[in-house]
Length: 629
Image (cartoon, rainbow, N blue to C red):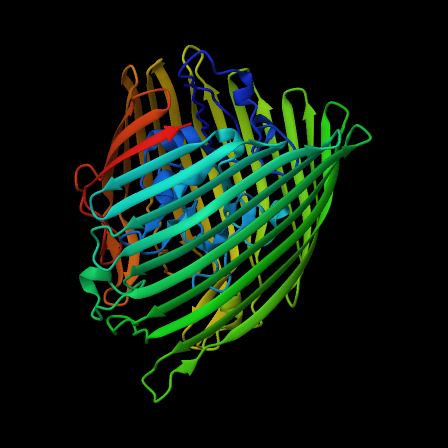
């Protein structure tokens, strides 16, 4: 079976086919990375730093969760708070977790009513339903408007073209997962419908996770040049974990745990039509709703102040309408313009219990409309490709923002490319930061960012593979922080994140694929002696993918992190030791349709912490089977 690996580092938007068989053709390489631009451009015409994880990559890794799938991506850091019942965050190039726009089938799923400023919890995503993951690095507000300070991650669910399948998996530590998917054509509609469920107790005290849901994708054509696509999804998640910053099962004085329940609903509709032979129109309508309920026992005082018991029932809705029109102007120029309207409504019915006769209510109810206009263009001049974009956003009760981006690709030779990008971003204050009665501040300004990156890529002449080296620099301004003297949220921080990334991949044999990467990161809070959390200075990994016998595949990944700074209420700020974690799996392709896999997570039972007092899960074995119809 052919596979395609897409490698992208500090400036890469290029696809490298590392074929398992001669059946891979040029069409595999000419993929469209829709997340990076609203222009209909192939991946090798996009200047932004991009990483694409395919369904084949996910199957070969045989990972236990979406968070584990993302750990081998250069420039990212995935933090799992204890077992899967805890919050799982992704940080792109040193940015905050809420600086990343997270999409599922193009529908944004960040929730600005949550206490994390709108960051998305990756633990609720099921990897069995994902067809591709597209990660775009850099300030991306010229394409996505608010929230895209560090980048964008788009999880694309399986389409009807994927065929039908059933998968079952079980393991130690109370792990069980199952999914069923139908993919085919009903009439003239390409149809993909999947259901899934996962239960994961883990071996971390207090953590428990259960999730069920379904996804659907439908696509058809109408008229001579019209296309229509519909995506739908719904899931219910129940989870338990010790509160964040509580010191977890190792240090928490209060031994009760947080209880969370959430329902997520999303709908995405896309209509495209080409008229007059060249003008491409696109209409997009998205809807997202999240209902969440949580109860927390609070955190006893330690080095830092206590957190009283608290809870909330929140409801958030986002509706987005977008229209664009563009064209190819000759062979070298492509451009489009568009308008967008977005409405966000969020409410929270909460409380904080300070021990008075009655808990203190912390209710808020906010609404925000944002009107936007944007344009993008791409120009090809021989070996030089220039790209750019400009966008105006006007959110209610907040200053309007104009953001731009520019990029270039220069092909020195057939094997060597240079890429460079400049971009701007902004993030409107979250509803929680604005409206939470105890610390909210309705006068907050938007957070802003400027990013610059450059890279050089060299493909190997004699072997399938490539090497890349890149540099990046992010400048964040007006970051929202809590001021204990004023006891409110304020704009004040300026943070610079800069670093370098290097990676190579090579297939020395038809049956052997090797990949390694390393990221250096330096964060500096200007004017303050502050160390940011969850930012190791060095981070690297390696993958060995070996078909050691016909129909047998062995995949091993290693991930190494430097020491990093963290904090908790019992300890205050502390440095956690870096670690080296190894995961491995063996897959047997028993028949053309049936594959059986054995995976071992944390093979050498590495004892480490990603959050203070929350130990990582020890060695776990999993056995699973997939049947493709």
